[in-house]
Length: 314
Image 1 (cartoon, one colour):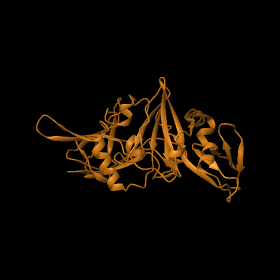
Image 2 (image 1 turned 60 degrees about the vertical axis):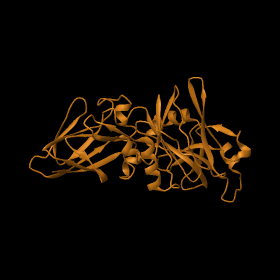
Image 3 (image 1 turned 45 degrees about the horizontal axis):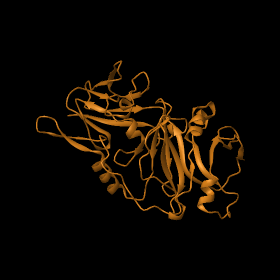
């Protein structure tokens, strides 16, 4: 089964409001048995954000089809409620899993204009959308991944509307992502999981892709803001495989996921993936954890699945 992480890229609602709303929806407080309240994120989503939608945009919806779920793109205008076309996640997954997908790891769901002056309706653009990717070579081609048709070749360029793009996290089995263009695409409802695809909605309360995939539990220490760890003793450990994080919730083990570690502290890695660090004679240090994503994202420190923690003993 392919597991999709959907990032809305939503810049419309305001970061502070959005994060506050999402944390209130996803989090709860537990009593640890000693009268102390322990905050827990990601246990259950108590409400779904609802918003008036822009009539110029497409909207992503879904329908249950037996034991499977069909995902659609349609219009938001009330007079066009019945209009929708399938979002072909199977075609996207097949391409991203292929040899071509290793060197061309991004698929755009787009409308390609005939020229810069073409005037079309949103419905026409959605009805004639294409799944395109740039084949990496000396003179790159933009291709339709479903037909292998070459749409244009560098140094030519085309005017397009990119509604969303998709990629694959190569370092975690069966994990893919969709990033929506929030100025052209709306998603205000969760998509249920089916036989072939499951979905997780990344809201601002959880943060970016790297914050979701690299969600550690710290033993003998506390994780504070800005990825700062305070550890009172000489030794502390980081666990990415607990059932509180993405990897553990997918029942993946250390043999399934390779986590690359860079640090100026001494450390050991147990068979279950637990990373144990020792300050030695240091009072501060750093720990950088990285999971391979794809050949494009890994080049950009803001997009790669890497978290670097500053560690203070005290």
